[in-house]
Amino acid sequence: MLVTRRVVTAWAVTAVLLAALTIPAAGAAPPPSNWVKRTIDGMTLREKVGQMFMTFGYGQRVDDPDPAMVAANRAEYGVDNTQQLIEKYNLGGVIYFAWSNNVNNPQQIAGLSNGVQRVATGSGSEVPALVSTDQEGGIVARVLEPATQFPGNMALGAARDPQLARSAAQITGRELAAIGINQDLAPVADVNVNAQNPVIGVRSFSSNPSLVSDLTAAQVHGYEENVAATAKHFPGHGDTSTDSHTGLPVITHSRSELDQIDLPPFRAAIAQGIDAIMTAHIVVPALDASGRPATLSKPIMTGLLRKEMGYNGVVITDALGMQGVREMFGDARVPVEAIKAGVDILLMPPELDIAFNSVLDAVRSGEIGEGRINHSVQRILTLKQRLGLIEDPYVDESQVTSVVGTPANYQAADAITDRTVTVVKNDEDRLPLEPDAYDDVFVTGWGVTTTSRLASHISERGPATSVYETGANPSVAQRQAAVTRSEGSDLIVVTTQRAWAASGQQQLVKDLLATGTPVVVVAVRDPYDIAYFDSAPTYVATYGYKEVSLNSVTEVMFGEESPSGLLPVDIPRADDPSQILYPYGFGLTY
Picture 1 (cartoon, rainbow, N blue to C red):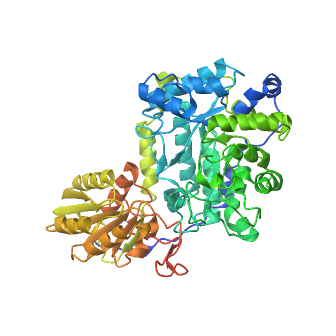
Picture 2 (cartoon, helix red, strand yellow; picture 1 turned 45 degrees about the vertical axis):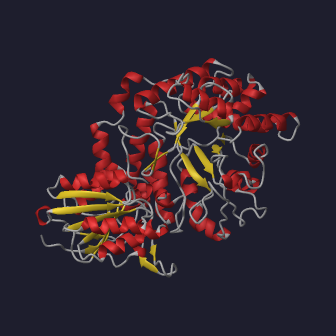
């Protein structure tokens, strides 16, 4: 097959399309409804404060009797199960994770959600709960198959189409709503301008603020047809080399740079009526010279977000157990300082009892006025009413399979992902692969599941395959074993995952190239890896390692789909990051 290469040019998103996505501001704060006013008036202080906390409970059910779950809940909270947790603190919200055994399958999740709502509406203030999770797509997705999986934000950035981003959010939101999750902690609105960002990376749509703004707005529109959307991490976590889970990042952007780079996607989200905005545990001296992280900064949360940007919806903190928010204050002060800064929902404090009682004490002592608490509760209750939870907080468990993971949703995810794969190098015209040209393909590199699934997809096209997974940072022995096992193969496919931060992966690729056997490098996360082995003649970026991405990259490699993804970021040189190796918008096709 003759291969014609051309550079695919990036095309701009029109103002007409963006205008078409505009919807009424769901996140705006109209005068409280009669129900909201009546409910607040009837609540005790303890019930009001409870509405401002969201955390996790262990277990598949709200009253899970499993001894391991009971032990975990007792250790964390001094209760047996999620039911007792909600009742003890009058919780306004819960969040689901795999590690807390909440998200095993759609039917189980729906049952858990209904249990949560029965408890929330049957005790205390009788207010339904916000039920949230992080379903960003790609590498961050809590609800896995059979729920429909999408390729993630940077992949959508490579596709360059707001309609595709909106469609992915629509389907995700519809499936979440069917299992009782009414708030998605997405989309990520950060602009990833730092190639060595350890915490955002492919979770961001792009390094281009305009593209991030367009796709953020599109996804807000899509999600909020069924669930609350949550733009994160304000005021922008895209230019840091420190992970706020383990340290306190400092963003050195000037106010002008913030206005040009970081803030536009949040302005776009607000214009689209975003229901909630999540804070970032980052220091931004240009906005607050005190050294406080944004989560605890009144100049940022109230001065900038509320007053200057005009946002009146719910503000939720990032997890309060993260180190970035704990460096300046102890766990008893953090929630108090966050409320004083202007936030509404306190997410996952590391010591819930301490945090809860600290807020109560701050109100009783007069440090925080009860009117300030009422303002947050009003926003939270208004959101719950907008979501329809007051009329009916329950889901129909019998209908879960007719909504979640349907063939039509899978087909949509496949079609969207096919548009994201980016061929960055094809110097030897190796791609597309002719199935009958290769008898034995050796698949190696990062990811046990990734390498085995990719090998399976290749073998379905005819070639025999063998697999050897080498881990996140392969040792000399592992690299030598990969080279030895590649002998006799006529093609090597090697997967990389954040190789820019793993010298062992970089050397593995170089060792395999030295064998003389043709090598195709598939970056299954950050596209930046190519800078560390630019001698590789064939390089493809998928931006993710979920099955949907592996299926699409295989189709592209074998010419069943023409590559159309464009780099949504600049790829800087490894030896001189000020120089661009492959620019934003670059991509090859055939």
